[in-house]
Amino acid sequence: MTKMHSLAGVELGPEFHAMVDAIAEPLPVPRYSRFPVLLDDLPHFSARLDLVRLAVIVALERTADSVQVVPAAGRERSSLGHDWLICEERPSAERTVTLAEGGDGRVRVTVDGTLVHVEPPSEQESRRLLESGARGTSLRFPIFPSAGPSLVARGDGPDELVLWRCGLPAARFRLPGPVLAAIYVSETSFEMLVALIEVDGELVVHIEGDQDTYLRKLRVPIDFSARDEAAHDLSPLYLHMEEFWQFGVYFRRAGQWWTLRCDGVHIVLEPSNAALHQPESTPFQTRLDGAGQVLFGPGSWTAGLRAAGWTVWGPGLDDTVIPVPSGAHVLGLTKVANRPALLTREGGTVRVRLEKESRTVVEFATPVVRHHHLPWLAVQRSPHLVEVLDVATGAVLHRLGTA
Image (tube, rainbow, N blue to C red):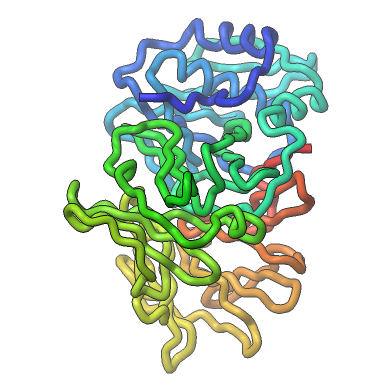
């Protein structure tokens, strides 16, 4: 298997790796070859702490085949005893690494109760290092294509993708042909960037990372140009694998959803018979709605327009009516503090609406990108900067910069 390491496409120099060495020394031998690393998904603006946090992730990765980095918010610690938590100023606990900036320029890193001092470079140099993986590359048509904490965007050329994974530097990938659609998926047993590309007049599935998947068999001649499509869109690629003989993908082209699938021995490319397509919480399933009359949200919640107005229903939830004023466009269903919420746009204002209140998330005239499972909203501030906002507060949680 080809690994997608935390530092894919990035070289951060000997001083960074010296920090990794210091942090790795007290780490115990892990029980599993791949395990989750949980990060506080909280707004802060210290690139120095982000760089140290990355050093912790790389140190943990040294002890395993690979790690899966995910936000800690709303996620319970594993009863298997194999995940690690990286956080700031929290009481020490088993498999926990805490970070704290000192007044002397050093950062205190506490690993399972063992204190290590490291001295990252200046704020400006730390940000330069964190953004070095795709520096100079334009970010075009950013999308949240999966249920996980990642973002994919086009780079400068039609065959170029930029992948951002939560807590890790962005990486640039040049693929063997123009890209039509893409998705990054990561679980405890695999990790891969999957793209639908054109090669020699055929639409094929290209994979970076774990190659052990039947999706590689999908290949079909086409009568259109993926290079032309790359000028105005990047489609999410949704995976659907029911059986080892029945699998496929969904993607959007020129405003129309299509499916490329294997039915036994035949490869079929045809328009999708569903109007709504969204990623399921499991990587190899897609949520579909034939009529397109509902919205899917986190926790298997569903929203639709009923006689009482916009209503949300689902497991563990009483039917909840969320007022939406006339003229507001509903962007999607999300969650705020375990309560259902709708994201709406009115002119240049994006709001999050709950049962009894509403809040402005961002004033932004151009399109925004919402995450289907996490309470995230992405806005493109410039050709080289995408910010990921918390829908509850509008605070910047993460920034993907390539300037």
